[in-house]
Figure: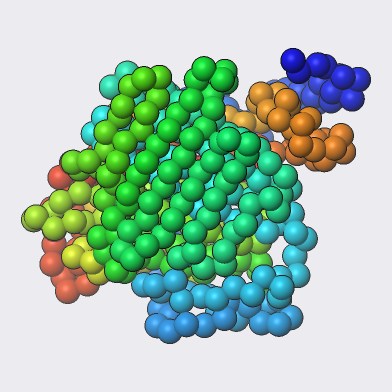
Length: 409
């Protein structure tokens, strides 16, 4: 049985005192702050403006960094052309973040699989969501020390999270990926097992380099055109993902500042009998040479410039509206399910047992600064998009999600 030891009591005392100070110091709103649907005080992510960016496309393999740690390139590509030599990174190791994340969804269910190392902490996590009931059927994050997970510097090599008998295993084959996992819940009688095959329906995707400075960056590879086939077993119930089930890959490597915010959306479905998928997002870095916005249709990326989001933070389940500065995208997103998560100082108490088992007292104090505030809506897109050749496509009930994230790590 887990015993409360003196050092842990000290940690709990510091948490309680800090929480009291935090609440007292945030009683009055500062300029630009707003209280959202959940009573959280936030500063809304500003709109990107309408001035066009250069949208610099990289068409061949190129090193991401120079030997002195400065960025060699920024822009976007249809393929993951950017090569990372991690020995060239000069930033504090705690600033270097690595992850491989998949959000999957169909008309009834959604969820996520994540393996990540944020520099001072590494983890694997699983979610399973039921849209009709609004329930989180399963959500578990297993923590390990940084460096315990091997992360390749390319998007094609396998990756595995392992902790005791628990695992998340991702294998990459030609034109498909397989994900297998087995994770224990809050009790040993509760567990979840998954087995997915993700079929890559488009050879092109979105690889984007966004600088924070001349030597700090985020390299993301978003692949929204994945067909999801397989099943999840949880509490003696099998959840099938076959017909009209999709997934998006979010692969990232980067040297991030401590505080961040972003908006990210993706969706997929059939339009005129062909798979159309989308990836939209902004909120961080200096996107002068590329945005994250693009449509993938018939296997080809149709790059978009800026996309403005309109949504109501006092009710995240109201419709969200998206419009591009070039007139090439007008969409309304209607949520059917809202995933809300707030990991702050007090929220970290839920991880104290894992933290105490894996980290020192001083490391725990540092990790208690970690925050993650997420509102992620699943639903449907309606409207239109315009391809590179001027073809206008009607989008009707395209499944997907849109999220708002505030993070301190």
